[in-house]
Length: 141
Image 1: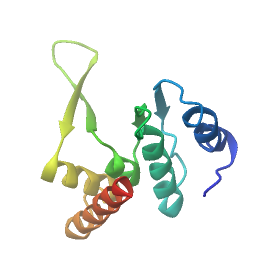
Image 2: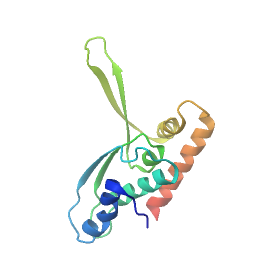
Image 3: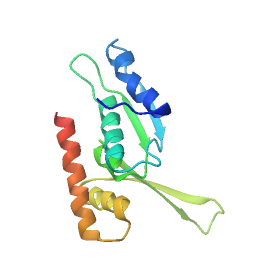
Image 4: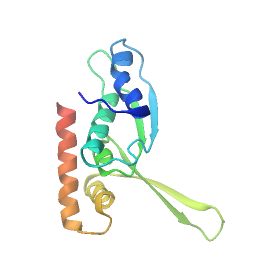
């Protein structure tokens, strides 16, 4: 087991004992950059805790977890990956916002971009593959 400090820990550590054991109804939780200022092993741990919160079991449906993130580790474990992009339009002073679901190779490339920007694209895609593979193994466990 992993215990996390602060408000992240209060939410994640108490979640399973208070909600899943009591058979409460599914809930929706929105996390806005819950993984800010962490990386490496801590980011992977947060990703797995979020996945555990969303998974159900034979007697209970899973919960809906929405995580706004810049972390490739968190994005890789998601059931659905939505990219939000902001641009500009000539017709309005307001920025245009576009949301698109990425799947397959597009998702792999987006996770690679999240991990390294435009640097070492080949290595970043290999890393993205490893993150996605680890996420699948976690879900199947």
